[in-house]
Image 1 (tube, one colour):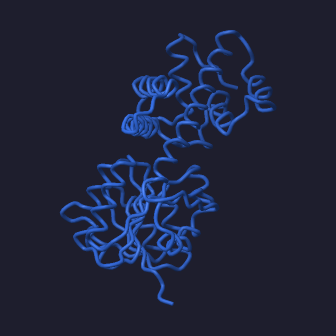
Image 2 (image 1 turned 90 degrees about the vertical axis):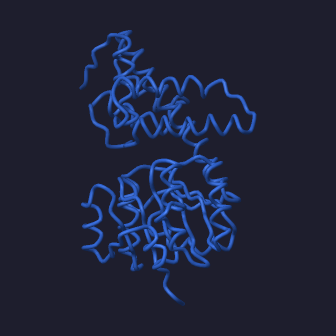
Length: 300
């Protein structure tokens, strides 16, 4: 059986780890640089090959993974003048691991299909730490045959793989997933601020809440920042968080759905980004909460 030739675009915190697992699992891997060449050079030292454009990558790949920030970036990578479709061929599979606008994904999938290629949406859950360990969760939106073909490659970096449905469905689910997780993180940030303002020991807040119904996967990562000033468990930027919730709000509008909880979450993220910067991680939104309450954070 012919071994799949893989391309990978987007060597950020997640992408560089994913690409590393792919090349270490023996797949021929093509990569390209953006601004930071360090991840590319590290991957080339492990056996990857550098290409100069997305079009060149498409010509020499069977499956191309994309892991970038926005729908606009994905569209340019796929359909731009030097994009993947410019070097595309019959049967090329494009796997979008970004968290992007589902409507954009559906439109782009139609454009890709007209060129004889296939687009699959494959957003990820978990963090760069799990990416380093090869333990990401992957959601796949696409036809069963294509999903089956790309699954062995995704197993290089994912512990759990969930086929969701048709193209676009995985990106919709990822936005809903992020709504739940970011909403929980916002609640923990505000709860920790309440504790500080009421002179309640924050370590006791963590101890008690972690043992009952208030526990969540966001409790420990946010409280790590609150208590220790460290952010090792959740390295997801406020800029990306705000972008994702904006995409969700626009998707709800397209479906004529209403939410009471999403607007205040969007406002919370916008305020935090304004206060401490879009590159700050989600747990650091606690600092925005304390600033707005004139509370000086006191860490352990």
